[in-house]
Image (tube, rainbow, N blue to C red):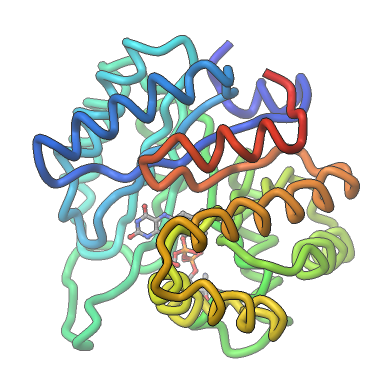
Length: 285
Ligand code: FAD
């Protein structure tokens, strides 16, 4: 059973997210992290996709290879902004032929300079329809507990999210630091009649400036108490990593108390922080 929809129906999933490395050394580090984390027996893993197709071949090759090498499925992320229908059909056909059964369907970000990306797509829902027309994939989508940065308001964000989830099999969230943001999003979706499982994404961060930059980009609020702790460890790589583990472990623990359908950990192509979270919380593997 390798469709994530089926795994979720059978019980709570545990998953790890990787990114496509840019160098041969990066590929070695990716393989080492995957091998080490395979020992934790995840339900599945995912590999991100560079905006506007910048990692199209690397993501595809890594996913198809890892899917064949590991006992758990690898799901590619796929963004549609800037792509033509033909390009995406070709890519989806290669996933189908390569035995991939799950796709995370994303819009992707338009170019930062405001230029027209071209292509045939604007929203993730259009990609879901295309994926469904190509094959029998299980389809995941993105959710933003603190609303998507381009959403004009909360009500609009939740309405489009509920409509998108209705076409998908499951959601995975952007990272966040306050478990309450996730809980409120789930309640708001339930009020709209949406009960498709949404898996919280948790990031054991490893860098103070990186965390602040990503949080700003994604519209994730860093609580004041965490800002103060980040100031304390700034410049000390190992202390920052350990703080990332402590913060992520506390968040996972709170989320498990909510009865979440799964936990998706941003591995950032490293094994150590996730191994420590598992050890600290005595997680099943
Ligand atoms: P959509 O669901 O299309 O939503 C984008 C915005 O449009 C939202 O504000 C939504 O409310 C609004 N909207 C939706 N439908 C309509 C409509 N019909 N009319 C008007 N407005 C509408 N990016 C990458 O480049 N590569 C990755 O690998 C990647 N992985 C990600 C993984 C996760 C778990 C998450 C949460 C995000 C990821 N992203 C990735 C980021 C994502 O591509 C961006 O956030 C992007 O800006 C939006 O993608 P989306 O799929 O959420 O878009």
